[in-house]
View 1 (cartoon, rainbow, N blue to C red):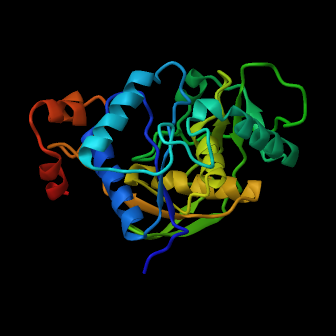
View 2 (view 1 turned 180 degrees about the vertical axis):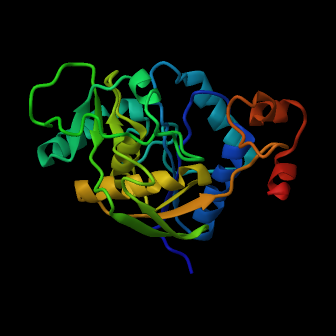
Length: 276
């Protein structure tokens, strides 16, 4: 059966060349959209002003087209939910931040990176956000606060977040144990990943998020955030990660395995797709 209400998305960050791990995930997202008879959106996640480059976005689009991936909406194609670059969507994130502040769901955090590194709480495996010890939890979200602070979402300690992943099966994470109060706004006045993704997935009517297994724990965070904002839920499909010979997941630092390098070396898109 086809589902013309299916809306999937590709969400690259233009901070480097597209590596083979993300390319395989994007190919999976494309195939799932095709099989569902739905729409695929390309969203340019260029929130990081220090690392995002327009030339990387151009390269990503060119490499995905070469691979055979097609999308119907995006910064290069337009669409009803434009703009499709996060750097142009700040007003959406400010509105969500203000709603969370009024609800008392977030609080300002003055802890420095060194403060967090000095705690005994370490990040979980396959998760790059440290388990926050709650140092600033008592700070009010309504009181006047100094500029240049982080803002954190206050998780309901002990609450189990359960969802069914369409690739990995039943999942459960416990707030306060598997993850702590997480960032939704950075001290450099940039919306954090968790907030931007939740707001944009809802605004762009995304029905299924296909992404890597390393973001599985983030799904629990995003479910809590969406619930607090009163936003619709969506389905998730977390793909296995592509790893190197030592079992380490591939990242943009593995330049030799970027799609651009493989293209220039004569690799065909057919051979990559066949391997997947």
